[in-house]
Image (cartoon, rainbow, N blue to C red; front, top):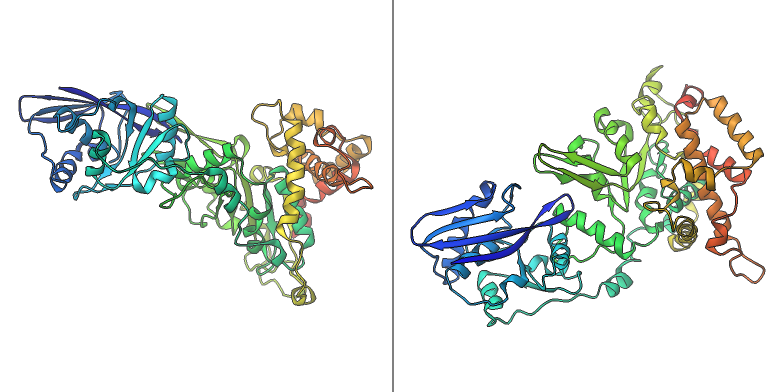
Length: 533
């Protein structure tokens, strides 16, 4: 007897359908074909033990199992459960008239329990795209997969429950989740708030500008100035995740196996902080069996690199292309996968090895030339790709002793959201452009070109510091964001917004906006000799 069971495999952050064809004939051999790796071929032993533990008889026939398409390699233990279902159906151990309406995935333990798998969410998305009506996943993955609507999702604990569902005799019911309720309750909860930050008003302003336009930012300052503390609070002022963004972000974490048991859609933007000993593959993704790296796990969120110069040179240089293109392409002999990598890069560093070069009260102990060598660990091309570069001074005692709270994250986030609304109105007809940080040359000429006075000021500064063409573009992008913040937060006499997002999107970049944007480029490569020697 021949049966077909649908499952899915992961490639990149998406799933592709796999059909498990099971043929049972007279004989004793058991064969799995279709480019199965060792873990898949070992499934026979796990399935045999799981069936016996659940009181089911393993069929002793000549069995051929084909994993189609046969020219794509199949990896992992997620095929255990669909192979077991195919065996039992072909062996007529239960009757299921609508087996072709199911997608099934799960790893089997020797005692018959069903273990969680990676990528349950993209599998659920693929099942709906294929027109399937039902999905069976491990219980640990059920809430993750149930966010996909118009699909009945069953969470199972053991093989017996799977048989009960397919035979129509079980008590397991489909699981449904209210994603909008989840967003309403969890999206605004943060562990850290900017009201706890004392002083550092100029840095807060730079963070507000960076979040408003999704710009990369580098902080440089002595130990204890608050670089890491403020970076941890950055997600609290970013705009809330939209439903499409949350789905894409959750898919990446699902494929990487980073979701905890019972997880649904991620309601908040990710914040990733890899250690400076991270390898290039761990940062950008790849490996023998490609997996998303830290920069992809930070997609739609923040990638924070503390102690920036301590990262190996090779690690930093592989980031140049993903920062620019916002996508990582991993190529193998027979296939290529793309991982999204549109995140805010936030980096922090000390000004020298001892950390106290230029400190107002503490003496730097570094030898001559050591400061320059330390700063030169960051290449000019990489530094050019960071839009805002700000210096942080130590907080004075009076500011630290002040018990009054600072401006809360919610207030800052309101202005950031207003500025993003302006950008959404401006780029509504531009495919793939959602923020000022993504503007290309054509959009810069259309929306970020300053007036004559602003251009003269920009030319003078760029000539004196010998800035690159990329720095010119970065300044214009940041100036456009500063202008959006300015126009979006202006109020009329009655307190209502002075401009609608559509009106603000067309207003020009002024000289004051250019001047502030230039101030955020104090660490350009040509300026190192003037600033740090």
